[in-house]
Image 1 (cartoon, rainbow, N blue to C red):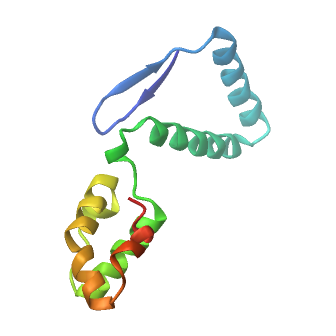
Image 2 (spheres, rainbow, N blue to C red):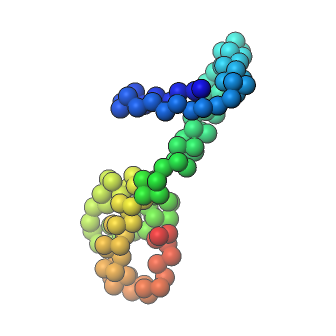
Length: 121
């Protein structure tokens, strides 16, 4: 068992893994610390755990895609409005922002309604 702890909320997630994986994980930490590579191991773990956590999130809570951010920023810039912070954090929020303002954006830019593929929605 490996435990992931969020110190801010106090929430713990126990990850059931085989005893072999736990032993290998501990051995890797041991080896890396002995050879001063512990930061390399931690960097690898940060990368893979971040991907795993994002993969497990509900669709609406995932970060927005790059295309959504680019399109929402273009809308905000063209319409002279603020892009809410939440829209840069969550897919549902950026989708709501895009939906609320895309018609005005298309009207100003003269873009046809069907060319909104950049919104990635």
